[in-house]
Length: 423
Image (cartoon, rainbow, N blue to C red; front, top):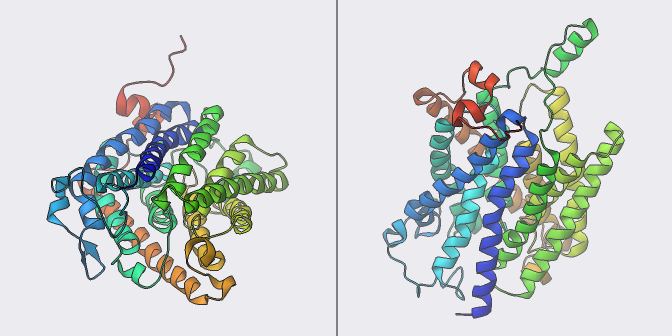
């Protein structure tokens, strides 16, 4: 085994772990004060629960022996009882212990379901959320990860590439978040855009304008996500190598480009460059470059980031102003749309001199076809699968809190605590 690779992957694993609590602060700052604590703790608890799920059966189902490319299973990997400190996965990560590869992949499995909570923030019951997360991780995330990342997965066999999780993480979470927003419904007092406009004209608009409670938390969360994303993407090289360096640089520049393009779009559309917009734009750029980080050059990363900021901004503004969908923190616009664009862009801009695969612009249109096929499969699977799971969970454990609990806020109604004690 290579000690340098082991050192880097341990560091990358720790960086990716930081991203889940960072997401909690990012989301927590965007909700109202009465839901700040509950939003952060949801991310913490999801990380803990999915860590256990991943150890007991998730890792085996994703990276175990594949059955026709659909799902994996290896009894020795259940509960991790068949691995010791000398075990090595000679196909996926031959230079590091398999326990380290397991730990690195665990962090991806943990943050992916946590992304979904932004779509149903401020109104979902804690118990029902946890039940859904266990089921979602097992029945949605695990199959998709197997199809794309297992060497024998069927989408991988068709040529789909996903360096660090554009399809597996962001497309799956973004489409599942859209399903959650539709099933759980709008927050109490959240106006329907065109009805609110008509009522405003008539002087009858009593809808609440939901404003972020703590914008510094949003910026802090985004900064820590950006920091942790270097482990997310550069760590996916699974070695301390030139590819890891390339992935780190493309990650940084795509995030920077999207932060600037989102800011400029806000400036044009809304008249002011908002701090929240800059933070969200950076995250969108990180999302978009994730599938491509180890396959594209620096100029391509800049293009991917610039386009991602504008596209996601336009989708978010459309959702807010033209639809009935209350995707509270725009998970679909940021992760779903950003992940879709990044996954497709990988098929356009990939170049063999970086990651060993050429895309459309370098004479291989088949790679774009493979990427389009992968997203065409994952989008309906994640959306309809999540929609059905949510409906089933709601039968046995209602998803939505009562109106009284929603009025009081989830901090008090679900946890009996408040974020601030200012008196």
